[in-house]
Length: 526
Ligand SMILES: *[C@@H]1O[C@H](CO)[C@@H](O)[C@H](O)[C@H]1NC(C)=O
Ligand SMILES: *[C@@H]1O[C@H](CO)[C@@H](O)[C@H](O)[C@H]1NC(C)=O
Ligand SMILES: *[C@@H]1O[C@H](CO)[C@@H](O)[C@H](O)[C@H]1NC(C)=O
Ligand SMILES: *[C@@H]1O[C@H](CO)[C@@H](O)[C@H](O)[C@H]1NC(C)=O
Ligand SMILES: *[C@@H]1O[C@H](CO)[C@@H](O)[C@H](O)[C@H]1NC(C)=O
Image (tube, rainbow, N blue to C red; front, side, top):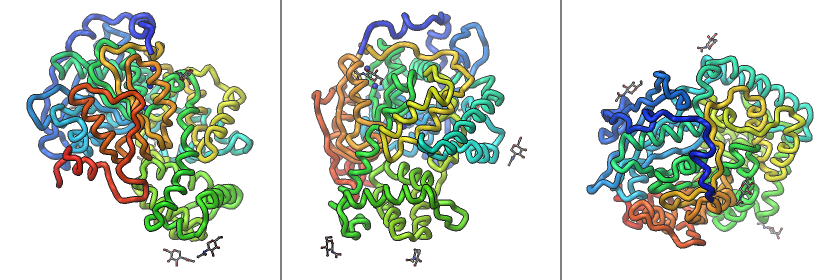
């Protein structure tokens, strides 16, 4: 999720027609921190709630919302304040993600900060974005609407069915509970929530924030809306926020094919860790044979037990595997079983990657991946004919996964619920303190060019290239990147412009960010 800009002084005042009552700008209540009601969490981790307006555009309304927060307290005195996190999606349950990575984040931020995440509007149990009564209904709808199928634009019949599915989805959601609260989960409102949290927890009223993937749309938005309140802010795995608000998200697919090609090249450089290397083929031959296989299963899918292994099924598996180089040996082994036509073995390896369900298996916990972006994306396109050029651009941008973008493009064009407040400004912004923007060279979900795009517009920001694989910096350990990040949090120092940090180990080779952090003395051994 894991996600961009320059400045015209228009962002906050000029572009918002809405008047905010002074009560909403006042310092909010303090948060009463207490134990989390989750037994598996260490006792040091605390939870708390913060009351915020449901609708920031109605300052006189008493309708409020409880934001649920989780805090990992600083390890060392003196405290340097709090850092807020968002891990993307949109729709990821942020609190548990932070809790699970507490040690890593302390190591990367220096240990003097409290680390705080809240479940954003629309996600988890906070104003849950749900078009359905329960998971059974949602799972049925995903199948019926074909939103987890990936027809190419030339495949008229399949595309038509998927289009009808998106019409049905738009209709269903507009008649669900979302008709009441679907207007209140925009990124702009979540940005205001972040500032309410800042008001509640920080002495200096300044924002410190680290966002990943969609969290970079949130980060760019909050920085553009409140430029004078930015202390330190990292955008890591950048999504192009211009496209997020105004266009079909095509750019996010830009590096997919490059990453896929590199997997075969890296495989041959680590033959002991990569089963595919045993096929005695060149990287180009291996890649071609996988594309041939993907074409083959379009016409002749394979039935294995209760599972239909078709084009979309395999692509979903590849897409999920590309998110982290840790998954590459399993990906290579799984592709090898497909080339051997052993689908029994393929399903075992598929299960290792996908076994826990989640967004990639179509097993969504809620509908926030549609409800949040679609409520604020204004492309002006509402018919299949109007979005056809985008569907073609998607597959031209990525031969491997472009058509995965159909679902959001179609559903958003059919969405009937408009956000009460949408960020209308640009990202030409001078923030009080400069942003650190980081893009991976080989990120299949957010390309380096999006990081370049946003870095060009946030005045004074520095772009760091992390030469690693996977989605965001955390997926591939680099002592150089880790030092740059820690320097920024510790004393606001930015790397030199043009810095590129290489990872400490190649993909397919054993290694982890945690090991890197131990090696450079940022983290203690277990
Ligand atoms: C926060 O709110 C949730 C849900 O409303 C509640 O279950 C929980 O007890 C509250 N936590 C605290 C620390 O007040
Ligand atoms: C899901 O919701 C539908 C519609 O309200 C209901 O008929 C069905 O029994 C529910 N299923 C489960 C497993 O709760
Ligand atoms: C590998 O491929 C090369 C070139 O195609 C061939 O000469 C060689 O015999 C093959 N080696 C094995 C072990 O199959
Ligand atoms: C396919 O894989 C299964 C499970 O690993 C194995 O038991 C079986 O022998 C393999 N089949 C063939 C034809 O190699
Ligand atoms: C950033 O991306 C937007 C949308 O694709 C584009 O219009 C704009 O020109 C880009 N800016 C830069 C500096 O590349």
